[in-house]
Amino acid sequence: MIGSAEGTVTALVAVRDATRSYQLDGITVPALRGVSLTVERGDYLAIVGPSGSGKSTLMHLLGGLDRPTSGRLLLDGRDVSSLSAADLARLRNEVIGFVFQSFHLLARTSARDNVALPLIYRGVRKAQRRRLAEETLARVGLAHRLDHRPNQLSGGEQQRVAIARALVTEPSVLLADEPTGNLDSASGEAVLALLEELNAERGVAVAVVTHDRGIAGRARRQITMRDGVIVSAVP
Amino acid sequence: MSLTEAWRVAIDALRASRLRSGLTMLGVIIGVAAVVILVAIGTGAKQTVEEQVEGLGSNLLLIVPGQVDFGAAPTVSRLRLDDVDAVIRVVGDRNLVAVATSSGETVRAGTRSRFTSVVGVLETTPKVFVRSIDRGGYLSRSDVETGRRVAVLGSAVAVTLFGERDPVGSQITIAGVRFRVVGVFAPLGQSLGVDRDDEVHIPITTAQRVFDTSRVDAMAVKAPDRDSMDALSARIVEVLRERHPESEFSAVTQEQILGVLGDILGILTGVLAAIAGISLLVGGVGVSNIMLVSVRERTREIGLRKAVGARPRDIGLQFLLEAVLLTTIGGVVGIALGVGTALIVAAITPVPAVVTWWSVALAFGVSAAVGIIFGVVPAQRAGRLDPVVALRAE
Image 1 (cartoon, rainbow over the protein chains, first blue to last red):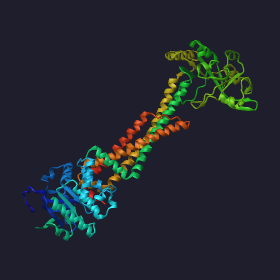
Image 2 (image 1 turned 90 degrees about the horizontal axis):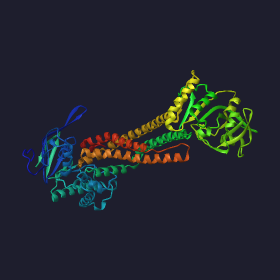
Image 3 (image 1 turned 90 degrees about the vertical axis):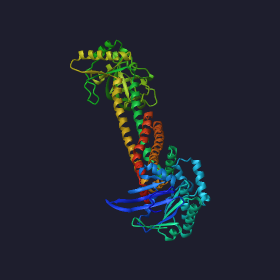
Image 4 (image 1 turned 180 degrees about the vertical axis):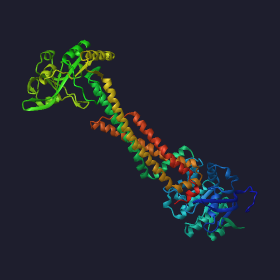
């Protein structure tokens, strides 16, 4: 798949010869130096590499949070270079679900309202939002935690709320950045099992960024990065 | 995101940090309340002064020596009683002309005494000015023509000298000369800072003899109607100039006095409003400050909202509405506080306070505008945040 120029009909997200560099005190620091990768429907891949290898930058690109300095990024078949910030935000809302290492739940906000948040920006009415949020929380096994706030939930539960928030918009791809990094092994295992179940049963593509070889080994594809380039892709 | 949703999100955010929202509003509340209260007091003072000037009587011309120049030292009067007769001839009715020659004197009754303003007058005074008699009567024309030693006491003077007793018929001395009390004025209160109950009226002829003078300090003419005032004033000034070519005379109307006082008090009200406006501005800067802190504190939240699909304008709108909510709620509370305080001040203190709708509207408009103006910069900053950077923020 890597480098396949003709983006197939199943390609959800594709980067082509993408570079990304940052300006730090006037010095240009390259984070990605020419990366090509395609995520297809139903994919399950892991992006591994040491810190500073560019794997998080790549995930930001795949999620449409960032744009490449050069090269192309296609989200759901659309070239993001032609999209405004508002169009890109809408595309993220419709296609992508994010799961972060530190959960990023809104404090002082119930699990239900946290999960419903993406639906606000889609223009879903409040009653419908609540219903969808409750259904999705039930799907991740938190039907009994609807009104709990993040500080009343365990780390594993918080991450499951975050997964529910990513799922509530019915995205085509879940991007998980070190999703088990802040969890004990039992909670981490439950979170991974949930992601794998969603991938298997609902066909949601899952891309996990991790530095844990064990986690990466469970994915169908392993992409290894070092110094801003992909050094190996298995298979 | 619809506007309704944006309002809801902004309200939720303000609720989530109640203490800080309340303290931020306090600046706006104080500013708005200050505008309403200070403008109410300024307006009240202006109305009171106007009522007092109008309370002197209607269609009054005050004839004074010299050029009318508020703030200049008064000119020594060259008016004499024969000038008064000349003015009466111009006016054509003695009952429309009043005069005054005043002197500060000690008035005694038995062992009690009071230093007060003794005014030599014509018997016409109550017909020209608004003055009513409580006991006895006023001076008569024959009192004036024959220079009798009779006096009408102001209510404060009567209380000092006689307490609860009826002074009519009693003897008093003014500057050592014996007088008989013929009447007592009804209480009138303060007017333009002068206690109008602290005076004694005696016939002007008697006054000139006792004070050893022939001058008349001032003259007042009641015009038959408003339209004739200008012509009458011109004719009186002309006659007086013919009789005293070396002197200047002026006739001022109540409108002119009101105009000058009104201008002064209007400026005063404006200055008070401006000072209060500055505190409102400071409140607005406080809102801006808190919003910038809030944007910084909630950087991760902004990043997350953007990650799940918030557009730059959704984020900007949320923060702008928060600022506008802070200032408009603060504005409404401030107006309630200001109006309430003004009503209490007017009810329990001698300070007059009149709440005007324009000050309320102005204060509310300014506070809402302050929210928009001072909310724009933090809102734009929030809207433009790079989601990748925002999500990484600590």
